[in-house]
Length: 92
Image 1 (spheres, rainbow, N blue to C red):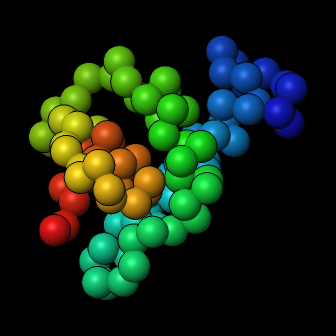
Image 2 (image 1 turned 90 degrees about the vertical axis):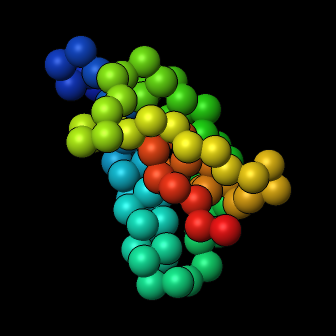
């Protein structure tokens, strides 16, 4: 699957997007439940440049799929940085 094309997208891009979806919605759930948001730190660190590449140039609106990027403290877990880039507000 990683080496096949799916329309204009390479297979690896579909896998990356699925992984990002699982990570960020896991972050959403952990945040809503007041649980630890530091989920899969190694994977989250690897996902951040991918998220920037995939979603960096897309339109961002308050009511859209991706809101404006938010700030995250430098010392925040890697997944907080991914979530903030995708428009989530990071709890303090």
